[in-house]
Length: 293
Image 1 (tube, rainbow, N blue to C red):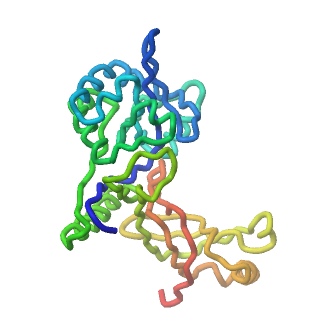
Image 2: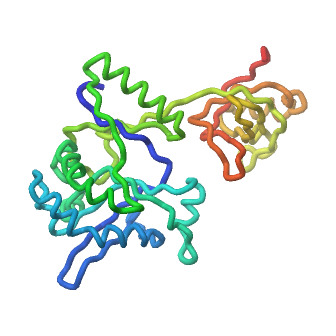
Image 3: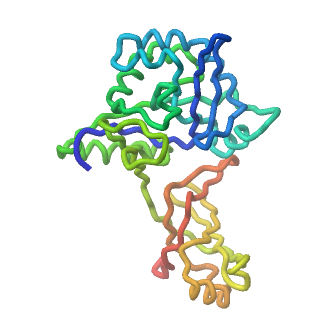
């Protein structure tokens, strides 16, 4: 990677598109998923945006490309709650949702007409200028924030060091990783290499305390190793069901009494905390047995 990039924390939440649609009959604000599904349980955020939309438009009026927002716009961001699991449960509920504590973290803004046609040619640096312009308005909203970010020049050694430190700091703070975005890229309503996700991987050594039989094509052989142990003061229990060859699954199931008690090296994206305070691993994969431990 080369050039100046925008770095952002990779949030563990729900990607959400808050669509602001003015008309002769009033204003409509609707929250959609990337697939066009309506999220019905973030009305508190919709209301805050609705009450502030004229201030947002005015704040952008004198910024390059800002006048194009007057006919409606989309705020692209991530809604986060206390935990990802609880947030997803609330997002999917039709009634009795408890999502009032959820917060929208905005990382992009697009005119409605351009969003509807699938792209906006304004470069990210210009869209950042629009976000900077609306910051005073956003700062008054209790459940809406602008996503923090860092600009780095990857043509320099200092910039590369900044990226590495930023990524590690965000992982240590509990984020999934970071996003690396190209400043000269347009907005495109689909996945693009202009937005790159950086996720760390780490390995954890855990004791095998049980084995589970597989299902489907793995019926009659190993499905998962039940692993337990302590890493960096965190007590972890996790089922590890990937990283095995067919030969491994046959062998470890046949000799499962010899597998229990061995130390497994497990690769994962990050250590996660469950609602009950215990810990698990995100996307655990078996690497090997460490019989030296």
